[in-house]
Image (tube, rainbow, N blue to C red; front, side, top):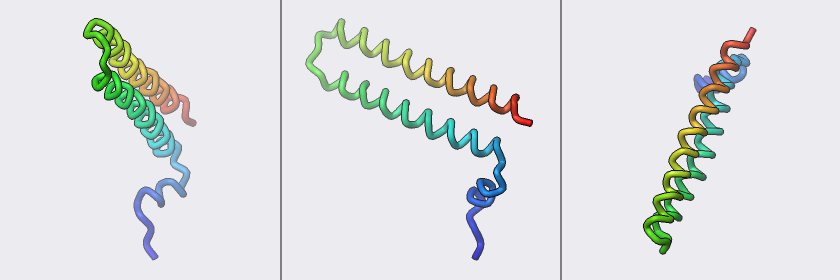
Length: 81
């Protein structure tokens, strides 16, 4: 029985692939949470000024998450044997 290509790569223990998948999953979970927060803010009955502040915080949270996870991924790639 032939395995899927990503299962073969995972079983060969290619650390780059594992690191990429792990960081992708981490980023998607955090991004999903921040997008959910953004959706909740958009449907709330808050004053426009308060909504704008919360949307800015949410936006910069997404950007910061992307930067942190990208930096972590690059550092793991450079430190691999």
